Amino acid sequence: MAKKVDCECGVSLVGESDDEIFDKVKDHAGAVHGMDVTREQALAMAKPA
Ligand SMILES: [Zn+2]
Image 1 (cartoon, helix red, strand yellow):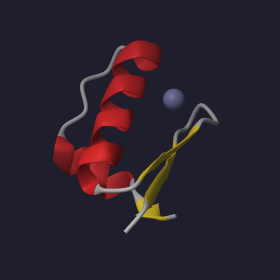
Image 2: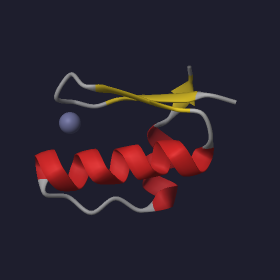
Image 3: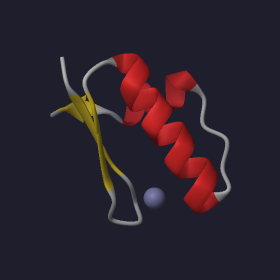
Image 4: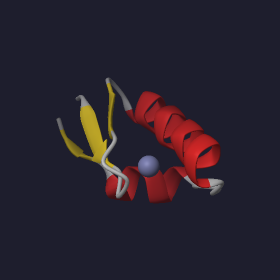
């Protein structure tokens, strides 16, 4: 099931699987916000897309 995360900065990230949305959130958080995000945190923020 596709999942979506709306970041607080206004960017929307969409992944086709838990692995994909975790990768995107982790990359975005690290590159844009300088944050480390765990898989649990990324999936907790994700909603059905
Ligand atoms: Zn962001």
